[in-house]
Structures are given as structure tokens and as C-alpha cells.
Image (tube, rainbow, N blue to C red; front, side):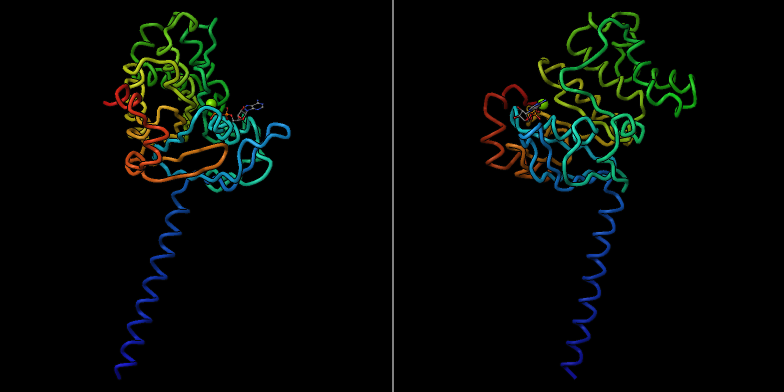
Length: 279
Ligand SMILES: Nc1ncnc2c1ncn2[C@@H]1O[C@H](COP(=O)(O)OP(=O)(O)O)[C@@H](O)[C@H]1O
Ligand SMILES: [Mg+2]
């Protein structure tokens, strides 16, 4: 009798465990917006990414940290179709995108803010924003939508509204970064890729930009992949993080855990950086 009871307990336990595991897998696949699986990316003969995997769920802010030359930009460019991986897979909402052209990837809802705050310098702030909507314009319901998106960007970064007739080349570094982000937002991205938005900016300006990014990600449910060398500031804003070293993903975890990780602290959160980036 005792044996039978034990067996019954075991069967119930096994069924519950199996159900829980299936739920877990199902939930992950349902909410995972982006799945990068074992990609390998090359420049000619030189391999820049080796078996890199990463996933993002809807509404998450995830940061990818790593030293100069680690392969962070290459990962974003692999994702946006600029430097397609030679092998591996990338799924966006379960659609394979590793063979698509960059403009097709933008249309699916992925926008990239390139390294070095690239804006069209001879054009006004307003024209820069209109150009951001251009790729998607026929999918947006005409001029009203473009106007609405512009107002949205001006509400996020009021300084851009004040400078809307000014040529982009005459803006400060921080304002150019805001414009570069605003231009990407004009395409209504579901996933925004940011490549080192803090580069060359004063800590106060970076903090302001990060604050805006955090707010609109929460309010608009925009998913964000933030590439940064400033690991502390990035990990403080993100939910999760990945660490890339020499083209390989060496660590991933919750942002709070990575901030406490001794290896991460030693390699990426030096004391000098701590003093500068402590909020
Ligand atoms: N266009 C390119 N041609 C050849 N090698 C490149 C090119 N861009 C980057 N690399 C190399 O790929 C590696 C990763 O670079 P990158 O992705 O720019 O790193 P990160 O953005 O982390 O600083 C580096 O060794 C870099 O020299
Ligand atoms: Mg880079």
C-alpha cells in the first residue's frame, strides 16, 4: 500500500514538474521577441563574432557591455543586416531575419542608432526627423502620423523643438545624440538598438539621455538593446546584461547581479569609472 502511495506521489510530482517545465519553455518562446542563436560573423577572413547567442523579451532593456574592439558594433550590424552573419540564426518574432536586407529589417520594426551620433549635418533638425520616417512612410498612415511622431520626439527632447530650424551640424554633441535617437524613433521601432549613446558626452548629458530612454521604453513598451562601454551606467538602467569579450559572449545575467560580479567589477567597473558614473 505504502509503495503504491509513493508511486502515486511520484507520478503526480513528475506530471507537475513536466507541466512546469513546458510552461517555462512555452512562456520563454512566446515572449522572446528576438533570438540570436550561435552566430558567426566575419570581416573577410577575420572572425569578429564566435557562436554568439542572445535573447530579448518584449519591453526589456538589455545591455551588451564589452571593451573597445570586443565586437559590440558587429553584433548590432549583424542584427540589422549591415554585416550579415555567415552562420547561425536570428529570429524576430519567430521570423528568420538573417537573410534580409537592412531596409526590410527596419520595416519589421528594428531601428539602429549608429555609433558616433550620425545625423545629416547640413539638414535642419526637423528635416532630419522627417528623413527618419522616410523608410517607413508608406506604412505609416501618411503625413499626420509623421507629424504625430515628430511631436512625440519633441516632447521627449524639448531642446530639439527649440532648435527645430537649426542645422544638425551646429548642435552640441548631446543634442546630436538626442536627434539621432529621435530619428530612429520616427520609424516606430518595436526594438531600438543603441550603439554607445554615451560616447564622448559629459556624464550629466548621458544621464539625461539615459533617463529619457528608460522612461519612453517603459511608457511605449519599446524593447531596447543598449551597447555600452560605460558598464556601470548601462547596468543601472538595464534589466539584464551580456558581456562580450573578443567576439565571444562570456557572461550573462540580471543587471543587478552583474554589477555585483567581481570579474565584471574588476574588468569593467573600475574605481575611476565608479566615481564618474555613480548616480
Ligand atoms: N569594417 C571592418 N573591417 C574589418 N575589421 C573590422 C571592421 N569593423 C570592425 N572590425 C574588427 O572587428 C572587431 C570588432 O569590432 P567592433 O564590432 O567595432 O567592436 P566594438 O564595437 O566592441 O568596439 C575588431 O577587431 C575590429 O577591428
Ligand atoms: Mg563599437
